[in-house]
Length: 250
Ligand code: NAP
View 1: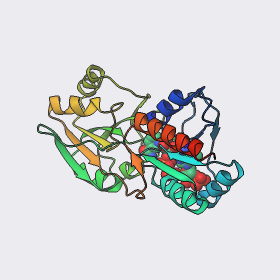
View 2: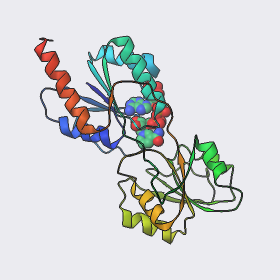
View 3: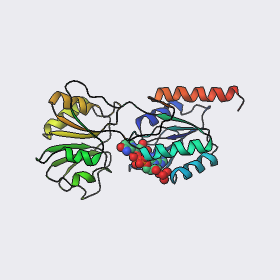
View 4: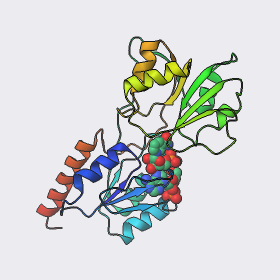
């Protein structure tokens, strides 16, 4: 089984199946972050070489189940997974956590992409918390009138956003700490991807409490594949898949 990861769900699935003799599991990371937290299962790092490369890997390794537990904004690998699994006749399960929903009290401005998010900040200078990942910062360099605080797992490339304050941190983040961050840094507006999940949701609660604007970037379209919402449901699916194969004597 090949598990495409880089998310809390993938790590949870790996933890749940580690040491389970029914599964021969490899966890795959893209290698975007400098320090990988070593999982308790065998893992590999780096791209496959597009859908053909992934199809080749599935064949070479005799993989019979592919789990796409990548981030909801990792659209390319999810598209490749759908193509490669289809071509190779490999069962594919997507783990698609639900998006965050706007609730009363929120001041969200929903936008389609990062360029629109940068424009949504407006002409007047703002103090902006950017939690969009270090690879999606370029559009904000085009609106340099704002003061940026960038929080990402690894610091962004030097010089990308001159003058930005950098906080290198990996979630989960607690609500009190998020509130303190927003107050201490006198943040006016947060920009975030609609990642969903609990690990990074506390900033939205803190923003609601403080009456701050949130520019929320909508998710890209993903291929329509069989999917579940949680790591627990994915583990159940894999056990069912395994039992069905055993019953068929495969
Ligand atoms: P992406 O744009 O969909 O993928 C770009 C390329 O990176 C893919 O074509 C593939 O290269 C390689 N790749 C992506 N995920 C991989 C994986 N799990 N194992 C091996 N290769 C992988 O992805 P992305 O948005 O750059 O995200 C990269 C990784 O970071 C993913 O694992 C994702 O779960 C994680 N992540 C992303 C975000 C985000 O906001 N995008 C946030 C948190 C975590 P080849 O075509 O050469 O196979």
